[in-house]
Image (cartoon, rainbow, N blue to C red; front, side, top):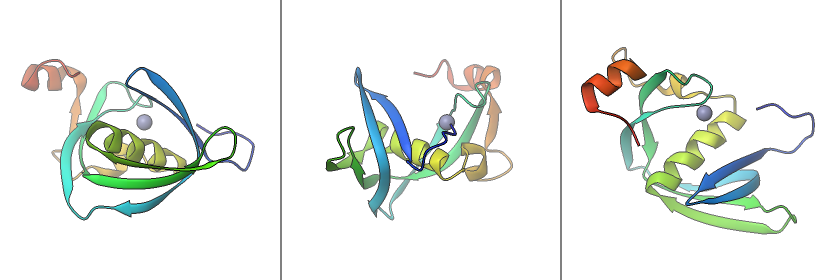
Amino acid sequence: MQIGVPVRLIYIEFEGATHAIRNPEYEFQSDSKFKLWDDCFSFPDLLVYLERSEKIQVRYEDQEGAVRRVEATGALSELLQHEIDHLDGILAIDRALDRNSLCTRDEYIRRYGARG
Ligand SMILES: [Zn+2]
């Protein structure tokens, strides 16, 4: 997403609520990683096998400009890293681990069943 103001902004939907996250910065990214098949609305028919930090801490501003911090593991950690990557112009495909790390959604479903 590109917007013409000098604010780095992402909206995430998590556990039924929408959160505005302005100017996120990592304060911590664990060295321990997990691997997953990631997908993206930018290329809906493709999944990418990649690595994310298990645990992160992110400093950001809420819609009123108040500084907040979120510590995340699991699904939220994965989501935040995906969206912060977008702000930095990095797509999941840029993080593909190797030449076998791309998979069409049809093939993925054949291999593993439907996702989420
Ligand atoms: Zn995406």
